[in-house]
Length: 316
Image (cartoon, rainbow, N blue to C red):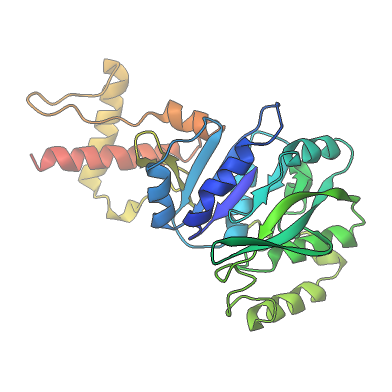
């Protein structure tokens, strides 16, 4: 399950409770992408979550589709459910999506709208409505289509349009599987991004212009993130290993090379007598949390960590 979130703290507890109430006994994971929102990060730090919940703090506000693309690559499961952080699941949603993805490559769940007015919850009985941004899909199909466009809005409709053009078999569920919240801060209600906004019109025009050669995106839009360790209330390395190499002097590079070689032959990090033991980065924990083998970019990250250690020692 992949859930992007931005400034929806007041809805998160209800969302999480609805997930935990699901009548589903198989293994699953919940990947929550925080879209550069410190209010949400503080909420995560202040609460406890089951071990299958994993949080990722994105270092720029790139929008929900960047988050969905990025986290779709690192999930360990081949069945993906994209969900929104202001909505609520019905107890049978996960089992229904899982079961139907064994037969169909894409599942569009039925929903009903609701809103809270002066503390009273009101449901809107309407004709069958199906999730556009909330849907289940096989991971390999999503990646083969190169995911969502990196737009702030309307990329889900664009993606669905590409599925229709390729005659993908899509199941629309008969039963209601989630409740969709209507509120003034949602992308579909906000004046800048609502259904009649200029930006949606522009994206709709771009999407309609796509021909058979553009059904699969040319690029896979992704963002940089840090892994949230909610137990220890800190951000760990994620996929943002970039280092300003040009800021490292030749002398510092020599020290990095020398101390790296020394640590290999000594069997451990070099400890300066009388100094505090430098903190170490547990890359095994990071690797387990991302479900990835250690990246080839890790060498750059090690250089960065080593450089910081050298600079701290030089200031003592």
